Amino acid sequence: MDRKQMCVANVRYKKPTQNEARRMENLIKYLTYRDSRDDYVPQVAGQERWVDRGMGKSVARIARNCEAYQSDHVLMFSLVINPNPELIEMIPHEKRERFVRNLTEWTLQDFFDARGIDTGVEMSYVVHHRETTDEDEPGRHNPHAHVVLPGTYYDADEGRRVPLYFSKNKQVNHIELLHALTQQNMAMLMEFHIGRDWEQQYDALHPEIEPEIEPEISISGPALDL
Image 1 (cartoon, helix red, strand yellow):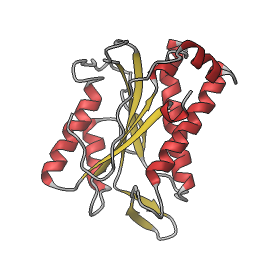
Image 2 (cartoon, rainbow, N blue to C red):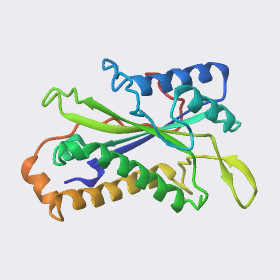
Image 3 (cartoon, one colour):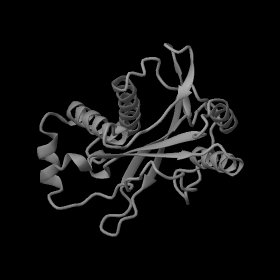
């Protein structure tokens, strides 16, 4: 098992401009009402789509908080936590959503702890349940999380909100750190659910399959409209 293929964690952002604000709201609507471009998800009373960790659980609330917490350069960060669908197949179906939720929350908690942001960062996330579309084995279950983060966070030492950033340079590489922590938590969850020999089990089941996972995205550009 190539641990670099266990999970992908992508980061994008939207700028604080009028056009980007409109695109941001469209993105939040898409994440709320779709699992993929073609799959509409009906809203059911009493079943919340978003997991609210400070940014809200509705399109309007999340959009308002993004605008309220924006920095000079970032209106909203959007992350994708996408486990390898070949590994997800090893998890009982009824436990997969909780698996993705734990992976998402543990990874982001570890990520901000590692960066010394001990006050935490507000977020909301939604789990999508799309199917893979690769030519070899289409239709595999591919649950993954979309996370919304603000452009700033509260710094207790300064007593105010300060810009949140994802640096990728020679001095510090937050993208690499995020990927490493995602892989670490993915391995922990696989061991918990499958056992210590989960890698050997995977290799025996899929000796030559290259998984379809969402491509790695650079933080350098604005978000792609879905």
